[in-house]
Structures are given as structure tokens and as C-alpha cells.
Image (cartoon, rainbow, N blue to C red):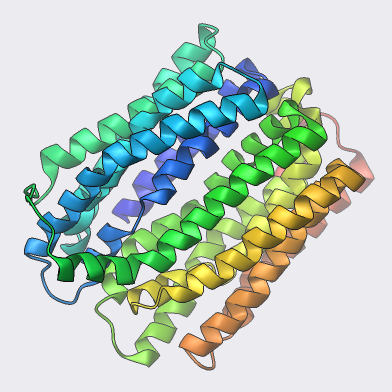
Length: 436
């Protein structure tokens, strides 16, 4: 309940602030910020060995392993800064935009996340829900205010960058001030501990690397085929879709330290089915609502300059709805210490996107991008069904999902019927369709 209340408040605020910010900025501003975030993310993923998850997953108190994990992440920060600086220069050359260098260097501050996440280990292990939500909500809230103020003052893409940096710094400071136990920086990390961190984290690390490389390649492909403005449309679509992922993040944050302690297969299966239903209760109306009301979102919230985003919002809404079916599969594998499936599935989807998206964008333009993303959603759905049947035999993703999906489709049918009969214009008509 604590987690749900804080996340709902944060995400509603983010949604409203995001629409206001988008109305003040341009697709090109979002495009530049998106390119910089992807470039910076290469460094983060290159060094993200999921040390914090491995410490939460341990059945006993991590003890000194907590200090060693923190030490390892601190050592990697200079490496991250070097990678980010190199990525900034290469990206600026590839996109022929010199302003990407200072933008990426500012976003390099995000590297503080590497050691900061280790501070959250005991917050999660001791199930301190209130502290966990305060340290993950306060920073983003302040960051939103910073972005809005700077956007009103005409700062352009810098408004988005400073908001993200402020959010990261405040979250890290709160964790350091309120963590149940502060780690100590050690002079060395024992070989056995290093190998244990790597054996757990390397598959997840490789999956993250593949995802970042694919995202970088996709941005380049979209730039070549459709221009920086389309990247802005794509980034804003992803940002709105992230609000739909809130339920997954909420349930996952609460569930992970708990299922790490469960060994009974029947209890795990029950937890998977119930958690899946909880995610769908939010994701289905939010996802299908995004698809159905995409034109209204542009008309009433974003403004006419964002009109080309409508098809992307539709496929994002449908895609997020389907992605919510069995979306927590990876969480159960990681809790069991099995991280290779995440790598395999991530490689399949990212390679498909990297290869198919460029070809489809060059050949069919905007429509090719939409079709490719929807195909990736279907591939992911099929793979999740296979993997969960392996981990928990007899698990069917759609059995628990069908009632919620059916209710969502009925609501969509009613909404579309009203639009067909009464038309789509007018605030009154809009309110009637929302009621359906």
C-alpha cells in the first residue's frame, strides 16, 4: 500500500509534468536528449553487473560482501566516466552535433547510480517499504520541478538534462543519509567474491550491453532514415510508455526480496499468477487507453506539433498491454539465481530490432517502424510463455490475464462505438468516451 500510494502519486505527477514539458519543447529537443541518454547509458550498462540484486538474492546476511560490492562499484566509476566521455565524442561526430558533447558530459553525473544502488540492499532485505519509496520518489519529484522551471524559461533540452541529474543526485544523497547500514570502502575485493558477483551478474550485464548497443544502433538508424525529429517522437513515446510500466516496477520492487526467500514451487506459481493480475489491473486500462485516446492526447495535451506521434502512441499502448502479460518472468528467474535466460531473450529481441528496424525504416518509413516494434512485442510474448513453463511447469500466462484483458477490450469496443456514432471532436464527446 505504501509503495502503491507513492508510485501512483509520482507517476501521475510525471505524466502531467511530461505533457506540459512536451508542449514547451520541440521534438528535436527530445531527440537530442534521447540520443544523449542512450550514449550515456552505454557506460552505465557496460559496468552494471547487478551487484545489488546479487546481494539481495543471498539467503543469509551479505556481511562483508556488502562492502566488497560497494567497493567494486566505486572502482568502476572512473571507468564509466572514461567510457561516457568517449561515447560523447563519437556520438557528436556521428550525428554531426557538437552540442551533444557537453550534454553527455552533464549526464555523466548519472554514474553515481553505480555505487548508490548498493546502498539500497539492506533497505530491500529488511523490507523497509517506506524508506525505499521516500528515497526513490523525492529525487524524481524535485527533478520534475527543475525541468518545468527551466522549460518555462526556454532552456530547451537542458531542462530535461538538469531535471534528470537533479533527480539522481537527490536520490543518492537520501540513500546515503538514511541507509540502514553504510558500506565501508575496502582496499581489495577477494577473488572469490569477485567471481561470485560476476557469475551472477555477467549474463544480466551482457543483456544490458546488448540492449544499450541496440538502442544506440536504433537511434542511428532512425536518424538516417527519418531524422532527429522522429527520434524525438520515439523518445517521448517511450517516456509515456514508461508510465504504464509503473505497475511492473511497483510489484517487482515489493516482490523481489520476498520471492528470494520462497522455495516451494506451488507458492512461487501462486505468487507469479497473483502478481501478474496486479500488473494487468493497471497496464490494461492504461495501455489500451493510450492506444484509443492517442489523438486526444495530442489534441488536448501535447499540441499540434506532435501530431505525427499518434501511430507510435497507438502501437506503444497495445504493446505495453501485451508486454504486461507475464512481464515479471525475469524477476522469478533472477530470484532463483538463473540469469542466463534474460541474456538469451534480450539478445533475440535486440538483434531482431537492430536488423529489422533499419531495413523497414528505410523501405517503408514510419509504417515500417510501427510494424517492427509490434513484431518485437509478439516475439517477447511467445518467449515469456516458453520460459515460464520451464521454470514453473503448468504455468499459463493467459489464464490469469484473460478476465482483465476481456474487460479492457469491452471498454475499448464501447469507446470506439461512441466515437463512430458521435464523432471524435469536442470536450463533451471526449468525456463520454472516457466514461466508457
